[in-house]
Image (tube, rainbow, N blue to C red):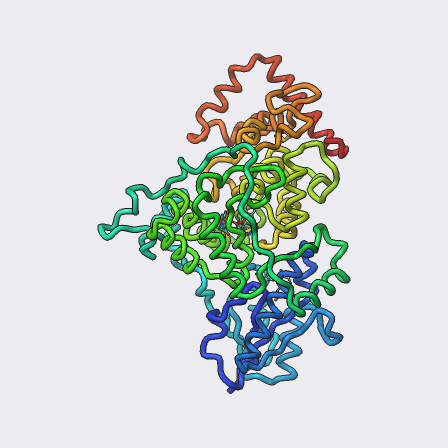
Amino acid sequence: MSALRLILADQLSASISSLESLGAEDTVMLCEVMEEAGYVPHHPKKIAFLFAAMRHFAAELTARGVHVRYIKLDDPANTGSFSGEVQRAVAELRPNSLIVTEPGEYRVLEMMKSWQYELSVPVEILTDTRFLATHDQFAAWAADKKQLRMEFFYREMRRQYGILMDADGKPTGGEWNYDKENRKPPKASMTSPPRIAHKKSAITREVLSLVKDRFSHHFGTLEPFHYALTRAEALIELDHFITHCLPCFGDFQDAMVAGEPYLYHSLISSYLNAGLLLPLEVCLRAEAAYRAGNAPLNAVEGFIRQILGWREYIRGVYWHFMPEYGERNVLNATRALPDFYWGAPTQMFCIAESVRHTRDHAYSHHIQRLMITGNFALLAGLDVKAVQEWYLAVYSDAYEWVEMPNTLGMALFGDGGVVASKPYAASGKYIHRMSNYCKQCKYDPDEVTGENACPFNALYWDFLVRHEDKFRGNQRMPYVFSTWDKFAPEKQQAIRAQAAATLQKIAEGRL
Ligand code: FAD
Ligand code: DLZ
Ligand code: SF4
């Protein structure tokens, strides 16, 4: 009996279910295919990271004596798709079965299900046991809830895994959540700890040359390229974060500083999502740092919540509501995505800076994604599909299971409040408080109308008034509409005229 075992680029874990009970006669297949590399214009760094990590993973399996079938992008026989490659492999190797772990995207799961009818061998689609909550568990938790809230899901996960829990069943420190301590603005001239630049192997250099040849037309710079590409290197990244960044992670989690893309963030999402790190080991490492007295509770709890709470919750939402979820657009947002998302000049410093980080690193941190590029898209009513395509393409950690609920749900409120209980809408005042961006901007965050007024300000009010029917009664936005109601009618008119002019400028590429 021999099995063909397919590993996707985001399944690079030796402990993945599709490699369990691997037999000596089995073949493990990995393939670089144009269909995946091109269905959105992925950032060149993302493609290089995935191809190089796949090739290193394949080399490690080969060194263990495993039969590996590795299809490179430029292999002349490459059919260009997962379906084409499994068909070709089944025809050539004649295995008794095809074994896969469920993928991270609904689109690919549908594809895998169709193989059961198209191939001459049985197809086994296994559960992805690397995640900490199963689909059934999430569905059972969600079943009796009128409204889903991450916070309550997170508490269940803390209890289930015994993370940051005391022997009496209470949360360590007495509170479940220390977020109120985690919203400090940046300090003057704040810089982040140095980051690791991993050495390039011959494999990596070959991939960089391939990506340069084939994907230079995609948005984003390929080099310098310093990503971790093996599990050993990803563990070094994790160690570096725990030692040098975790102690300040909580305090400055929401801060934004010009020229400092990383601050105290972990930069591990690409490694977690590709399988080079596992979520449980990351949470346990952070907890151990707290227990050893090396990091404060607000930082450690905040970090663990991102992984044990948000990451699992977001995945739960995706699989629970797909495929209908992907068609939602409750705010009817349809405005064309401005060219400045793809690097065209803009005078809004905060946007230009966030897009620069994205272009150069295939990374920007959560608050830039949510409160700068996401917030602008929300306020301006940018087309939800175009915005989602942008997020899926430009970040090296992006796969639909995690990108879609974050973008459509958290940033754009397009899911009607499943992920977020109120829209993350903010004016320039918030950005001014949490960053040093506004000092370098042509616009003034304190002005709402006039030539130099920050565009976020009028758009903020206009957004709320446009969607008044949905938000006026929202319990979590008690003072917003009472403030608007107190504005004189002339002021309200001037704000709405300013917003209309701003939207016109967006359409004309003049913002
Ligand atoms: P840290 O700030 O150091 O956080 C630690 C870890 O927590 C991250 O590595 C990540 O694994 C996890 N995490 C934190 N927040 C979230 C969240 N909201 N959802 C899921 N996991 C979370 N994250 C992705 O992994 N892929 C995406 O495609 C993605 N798209 C996003 C789109 C938008 C509009 C927004 C607002 C957020 C998105 N996020 C996405 C979540 C978050 O911004 C990134 O996980 C984070 O910025 C990655 O950087 P880091 O590793 O330095 O994270
Ligand atoms: C994102 C991506 C890219 C760019 N290229 C490949 C590839 O060539 N081969 C592969 O196995 N996977 C790739 N991926 C990741 C897949 O798109 C991802 O596995 C699915 O979207 C499921 O999450
Ligand atoms: Fe952004 Fe407005 Fe601040 Fe300029 S003034 S950086 S546009 S928030």
